[in-house]
Image (tube, rainbow over all chains, first blue to last red; front, side, top):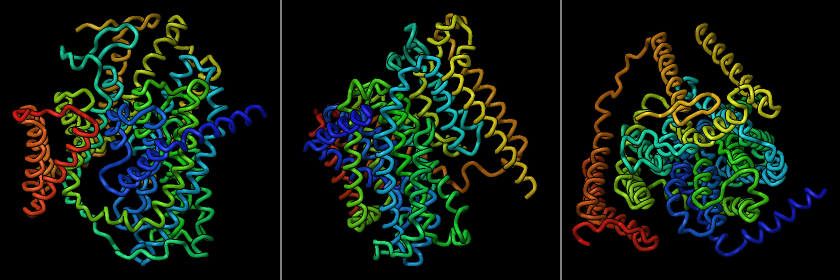
Length: 503
Length: 125
């Protein structure tokens, strides 16, 4: 009982912090920015948060800046659906599947219910996600106190592998990105011995490659170059959006999709390596399978909008759990928030809740508030946001490039970093062209130091025997999960290939 | 450059990079082999001059990074916007002028004024 009492006590405290004028203002800024980047194609939450990283000092205390960045992340989940439905381009990666049925609904003049259901589903799922975060995170953090270096190594490895294999279509390509990310992360001072690695004599590289520079290059600039290949037109299918409030039939059709989506999203979001993108894909597949008439899918089934849009919100919220309790970010956008916490001098991990309760509970409480803000921003005010889609990408693209340049410059007032970002931009462009996803690379880059420190400390503990990763119960269980997961993936791939061979 | 590998008992700074490099080689070979087996890599990498716009974009970017040190933030940003929208996107001149002036001003206001980033002044400083 004491535990529950502590949670309520903490949450109450959190609301006290989150309801201060400054924090409410920044939660609103986060929600607005998030909706905006969600709606705008070609600019995702990960790139936006990385853009704001250098400014996080100037924003204020750790709580305030994380409240805003969290708002951007879950806010983007709301905004993404708008573009998917109205333009048939995903405004944000986690809304890819929403295009399928959302756009069909819009073509049939049902853009209103599609957007309405997406917003309501997002709100319900987001709230379920936060409730989960509130009650799951504290006991999980307590459990994680038992973790030593071997456990951290196994868990990080599991997270990396899962993020890679769940996200992309090619296991080999995904793993290549992970290895490249880890190698990039090893540039600079070695965390244990202090030796200097891979700087080629450039003293600018001694502190390692800057995370902001890498992330903005790969996500921001790389994406722009890639989009330049084709002329991206954002043409609205319809100007008038009516009947935002779904009809009784729509409710009946989608209520279980929302519930299932929320649960799927939460389960996937909490996994190390899980995330909003994967959860929306899984939810769509599930909805199609359980539907009474699966033929409707692809022709404007509202469940195909309600399920995935709920799932991505629940997952976005749930992915804060591994970050705030274990200190392990599960996807690229959360990795940015991880970096923001580090910049502010807060090390996320099992001690966060007990040692920095203000940060943890303040952010959690702000999410309840932020979700209400987002519901208002995205339901009655959706018409305003649609205007944003009238800004052509041809103007947006150079502006985004400029924001990236000035943002990266401001980290340490160096033009050198602009060049480095440009190089990563070109690399990111080529990666996209050959089908290599930059997400796992960024994640590996962030997790690299944790992985390296833990493996070397673990080997020092065990006097060189790698058996330590398998003999300690928690680490052993994690390793077993990793192996099972790998075997399962290989099996799935084989089956897919065989089916392709037949068909 | 020499990074000690160390032993499994005392892993050195070269330990993880070495393992990673081996993994990378193995994975690359696996990727090459799997593509070989598929054998359908006939589609051109850049069909129908699609390389042109990304190349121009990269060029504009390089020009920006080069000029900002020489002539400072304000003129460089303005030139960059004009060039991008004129050469890459071919937007009407009136719009280019409006957007270029507006965006340069807003960027300066946000970063230079509110956030007090010491933007390069160039010859105008």
